[in-house]
Length: 170
Image 1 (cartoon, rainbow, N blue to C red):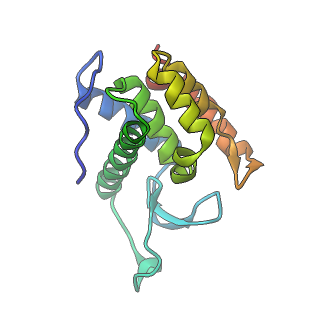
Image 2: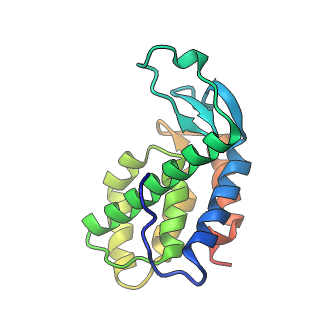
Image 3: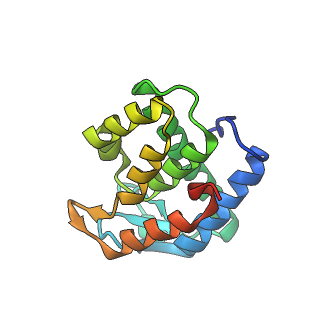
């Protein structure tokens, strides 16, 4: 399982990770069998974990809630670490835990590779590097499209994340 980067937080990293996972589990919901993601592009299981549909028997897969939570944790940590790596590749060193958690939530639920390569992301990183992390938080909050088209489900998710304390810093 990937490791959770130990970064600046106002509380214990594990306690914050638990809060994020509880939030994601609530938002994603649980399914013990494969289901088509609302974006219509991938099959998931558990709490939104992508399934490798090239493996034989994937349609008959079943998991417990505990297994779903383990997958969720590994998926979220992977996305949060990707956020840190994307920031560092663009010259932003030592991002706050608040920022990484906000971007981790965003990348968990979007085509993060496209976002991290975008000019908007790179410009926001430059602004954040000058001491204004809110530029990246604002970018995360503004992503509400799928394939360049407005998506009400994604917009609703961004609004929920905006209200969530880890993203807003409240």
